[in-house]
Amino acid sequence: MTDTAHTLGTAATLWELVERRAALTPDRPVLLQGDRTLTFGQLRDRAERVAAGLYAQGVRPGSVVAWQLPTRIETALLSFALARLGAVQSPVIPFYRDREVGFALRASGADFFATPGVWRGFDHTAMARRLGARGVFEAYEDLPEGDPAALPAPPSDGTAVRWIYWTSGTTSDPKGVLHTDRSLIAGGSCLAHALHLSDADVGSMAFPYAHIAGPDYTVMLLLYGFPAVMFEQFALPGALGEYRRHGVTVAGGSTAFYSMFLTEQRKAPDEKLIPTLRLLAGGGAPKPPEVYHSVVREMDVQLTHGYGMTEVPMITMGAPDDTAENLATTEGRPPAGMSVRIVDDDGKEVPAGVDGAVRLRGEAVCRGYLDPAQTAGAFDPDGYLITGDLGHVLPTGHLVLTGRAKDIIIRKGENISAKEIEDLLHAHPAVQDAAVVGLPDAERGERVCAVLELRDGATAPTLAELTGYLRDAGLSPFKLPEQLEILPALPRNDALRKVLKYKLRERFSR
Image 1 (cartoon, rainbow, N blue to C red):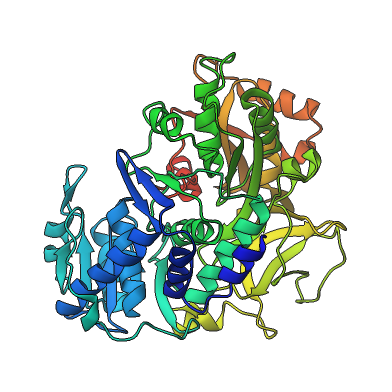
Image 2: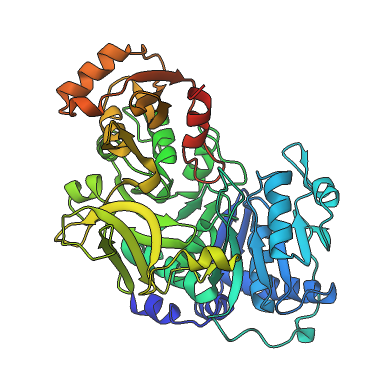
């Protein structure tokens, strides 16, 4: 990390970070969208005016303001205006509907709710009224503005809870994750340090700004003083024009995004998809080694993948100067200030190379959950967050994830890692994406089911052909799939396009 970025990273609050960056490079762009450009100075000045407009509407320090807005310049302005006021923000993914939104509004006790109005054919304001939301206002294009002279002093305590993020809630109600300005700054600092970026880079936000990756990425822009292109609606090949137009050097999001870029690259293998692109980076979902090798080989760019979650936006990250082996097979190393502990079933730390449960402690870790009972069960006696992930640490410090505790298939008493099989399936020439799940089975306890999404034009393998391929790849016989399903597309969430395995279990358990 540069000396300037390190100094900026000591800011107590997000608003202090905005002010420091704006003082350094007021005229440099920070956000690009279509024909519009927002500079660091404009971000500071306009966010203050919006803060004054919100203050005139009754928003005060400590007010809980939920917002369900797409990835737009206005969304960033609103969010930083709330940070200037010291309000408590509750971002909600814009694809969520009545059940998830209603739960978030009730659980957070939101005093205000910002919507985009009618967006992509859905009336969010009508939903807000239907749910009985308080203080509803639209913030898609027009934001309230006022005189900053009327504002109270900006917040100074960066350790106060001012953010409520929501887990995906795929099988039950979402959990409200409590973050502070400092935990978000720490997460963004970790990301910036790992990627070795500079003010000459141009980034991109193809994910919902309401996702935890929104502030993670924006903090990185503020630390290093470079811009990012915002995509309100991301789809390929449609978005390629904006990547090329703005000269994007860093793109990504998650494994699904890498695969989408690869699909487009394969349509014209002799032409670089985005001429200026040098790095794909992301996290949020497992990365099979074959995806890494395909990106590097076919797109002629580097790929660095990391490990994060709503509770801890950046835990480990691959660095561009890591070895190919480590970039392909690990999640990278934790930065300074992030402690990764691997423990056995008794909670005792295990040596390097030994699998166990992954636990975390550091400034980027959340403060817990809205529900005190959930917080009580989330941390061990030493204050480490219990992630539910399994893995081991190499002697080099690199973290290898081997699965989720809930993603272990138990077949006739033997533990089977779904990730191990998925990594092998991704190397099959017909496979675009793969998910392996355990299904209830009266005889075995669980049976192994492989669900495939095929490449365009590929012929679907039979179960016998697939198990033969896995045998040849060295998979133990007791781990071989006993059921094969083919889908046009795997079900995914709307944030980082993570595969929703619970939907596969529901569908194929029948």
